[in-house]
Amino acid sequence: MTRLLLSALLLLTVHSARAGDWPQFRGPGGTGIADAKGLPVQWSVTENVRWCAELPGRGVSSPVVAGGRAYVTAASTYRERRLHVLCFDAVSGEKMWERQLAATGPTLCHPKTSMAAPTPVTDGRHVYALFATGDLAAFTRDGDLLWYRALQRDYPDITNQVGMAASPVLAGDTLLLPLENAGDSFALGVDVKTGRNRWKTPRRRDINWVTPFVTRFRGKTAALFQTAGDITAYDTDTGEILWSYKGNHLGSIPSPTFVEDLVIVPGTPSVALRVGADGNPQVAWKSHKLKAAYASPVVYQGRIYALTDIGVACLDAATGQEIWRERLGTGFSASPVIADGKLYVAKEGGATSVIQLGDKPKILANNDLKETLLATPAIANDAIYLRTEKHLYCIAAKK
Image: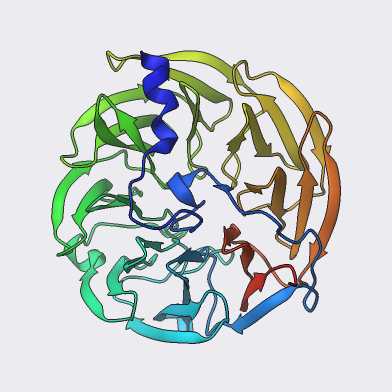
């Protein structure tokens, strides 16, 4: 029964975005997997570019795509005090609207990141944008402001001098906010219609960048919040703890994921948990071959793919045993994504490697956009959306 229950986790629809959309960080359900076919294998700044839009400022947030529209955030001006939310037609690249906010929280951060670090989330009808300044805004798909909150003013003891980067996630009518930092640290469940708190629960005080993962447990929608010291499942309606596992050296950047009846928890080492119906998590295996860095692992057809310091590692999801390892060079911030049996790995220097998966991997192409690339790719509308330092690219095969 437990296996059947957890095998259905990734089938849960927690938002109303259409199949084929990419509504949040790492796509549908946060899995990093798209159902697209016929994506291009090769591209450049001119080849197989459906459109390219110049962005008004920096950002490391990923684009999200739903309802025929692509949304992305940016930050500009001195110390990134001006915050942008932009909407483009996903097919033509026409800019539909742009909204700007003035930062209300501090903008101090590591030079590698930005105030536009958290990825927005959409249900196809609305888009919710969180910035590292604590500014949070909800818009309709046409750009009308629904509500706005200055979280730094609501909670003045929030502090993260490196820069907050965890992304909001939707679970039905609840917007989940990971606000885990060295100061006042907590998780919020916010009503998507009003912007008001449904619940607030304290979290470990430590700098953290993990985006929550939404799943099901005991007939309830559960959100997994992970820090370096624990992974805890909360009821998304009430904030009640459903289960928790405390560990050492868990990842504070990559997100957890699921395969079959296992929760894959990135760390050093990574841990696979089997959560029984009684809510008691048991360790199924641990692996030092799956060390947590910046990128989140992705699970596909019973195998786990994770980025190492120099490339990709493929592990058997059931046992944690390594199947193969492929060198790709160095410099990875974005998480890998999968579509049509291919792994897409974006490198910080601007190139994206396309790898044919199988018992032996095959590198099909290395596609260089010649611009810093830190954001995780999005895949929707039979296209790949890549956010570089200054541009948003839509990569698609010519018809």
